[in-house]
Length: 85
Image (cartoon, rainbow, N blue to C red; front, side):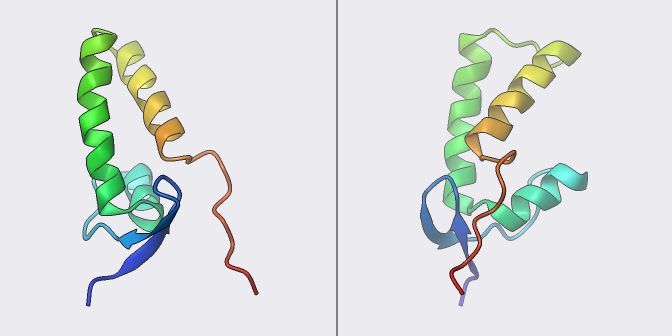
């Protein structure tokens, strides 16, 4: 049985990712809070953002801009929802 999590992006329970998508703190945070389908949506959006804003990921300012969009997309700056007790 695959593990499910409450995904803030989809607004419902969905299959969890099996491995962290990035190394370090950000990867662990995403692994614990974001579903696999939501991460797949991010990957599609990421390509569009890179093309639309003509981001050069070798430039720190462009990487910061993409990271800002990632944090907004995954609602990472919001407190995780607590289950009703």
